Image 1 (cartoon, helix red, strand yellow):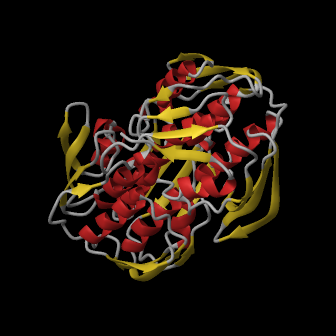
Image 2: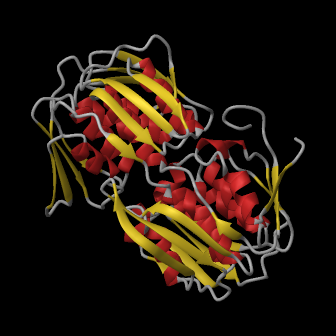
Length: 450
């Protein structure tokens, strides 16, 4: 079942060349943060290019529930009139974050140091994901959390009445955990310090600085140390959301494996903490070029041109690159199936606790489509068959995971037999225009009768 309705079975079949311009939606990470930080300002923040997928729309609803005035102005333009740091009101009802782990964890952080109570829930996938990784550090501020066994949703948070600043070493590479702690630190007096041994996406740090927070980053023996001075008055901003590199991954990867393809994906955010997939693809021999490199809103941006690449080679992806491409491993494994030789992916245990166990979901589906895969607790290996040799023909379970569903639909575009997914409904959470966009490029993706 999809996160917001009945299952939507879908099929993808081999197609002719994919050609044209793929204007993917706005960046999901930046969209979430724009709404949350806008709600923590005094004044009006305007946002252009907001991703209007279900995950982000759920965050918009949550900000309204906490007292911010959030308005859809049309055409991807939104307005947020905030309540200031520490100004969240207690919501009347339960905060439903749907399928979004990013949304719920960041919102928990934002409210954890306000003297209010809020209850959070989500769909079956989100309610199965661990929240202790966020609630444990939030407890250091004085926030209390009561949830289901194993630290799972539904969960009620009691915000700290007299929050204290914390010094926290992030135990696993997670931008969500880091960001939750920083957002909680906004309403704590003094300095909150977060240390990460391995750098993760830094949108929160960049955006906090842009909104006027006093924040500094330095490299120390312990790792990357971020220091935030609490209780600032954040300044409302005008935000231009760059296009999402995680969404761009799908038309880019499809172009690489479908014969004759030439696809331009304009205006993609290439923050170095997010661009690991494109570096990896080029190392595999992908015909992938950056054009018109520029900076927009403090973020590096470029147009990506991807062309069919029949000579892809398997490589060993450096484990230290995992944090910069953690959401892209599923579709990378699809490209790896069409490469020659082994593609080895290590240091990826975070994939086990995403919307689904993404290692297991992809390994199971690839095997069903005739691709040999080996996997362990924090690694997996895809034994590529080379261009034209992937059998396909299987029905794959999406496990309520948008990236799993889209990855297998990309597989079907170049496999020898059509590939089906049991439920493409979750795609709407992050890439609501996936079907028409890919169809306009020449893909053959159809909805089936349930």
